[in-house]
Image 1: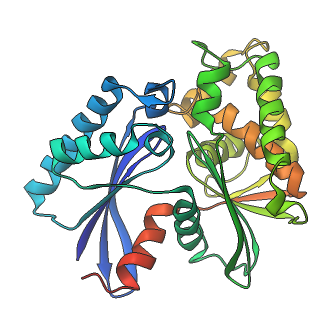
Image 2: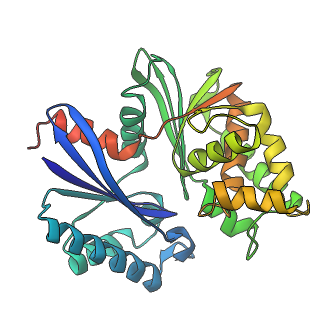
Length: 306
């Protein structure tokens, strides 16, 4: 069976096509568009320009699916539209104009699907799962492969970039400090995680994907390496802050490793650094599976939606 999953995120809109055969899931292809949808939310309201952007991209996806005769489609949106005051009207209009039904996924469900997708093939039975998105950050603590605590925080890589760096691509040292202050205040207020610590974080999402590519290039690690030492995050931020004049090799490094996330990887890493220090985590393991795969495993395979 061919199944399409469309994820309308705060930073990126993605469509992934999977082949599902029993309990075997294989991603065949992925299309993505970098939109920065969170930047179209003005005073808590999703703007007309933002809605039109989503409609244009989903219409292209719909044409592709119709051409290939793929009619099993699930589409959901996370923080950018979820946090907008006009979220229901926005989702209804997008659904009407594209013919693709849009589900507004709440933060709790997003955290659950993140957990299921990321840990499906993970050997560890316990740990911390963190997904730093454009407009929100999901945190899950699990033990014996069961969720014990989960929370969705209203901070993200794109929202930090929009709020603190203005028209600049890279943040200054002062702007990084302002991001740290908000992230630390937000994280310190999480009562549910007050007594939880763990030496290792499983990271998913674009921030960790981009940071992993940059980390491997900076420190001479193999391309397939998926482990990052958290003590190096501060060095990365200091090296690429706007106050530090970049030399040509550093500019090339950014363009090769984070071309589409150059403006959001540092705000995302600030959040990652704050969380790593809060939980005493020495390493981050990147997982390429997340909310889309979690939805498939829990809603399609387990419920036999064939």
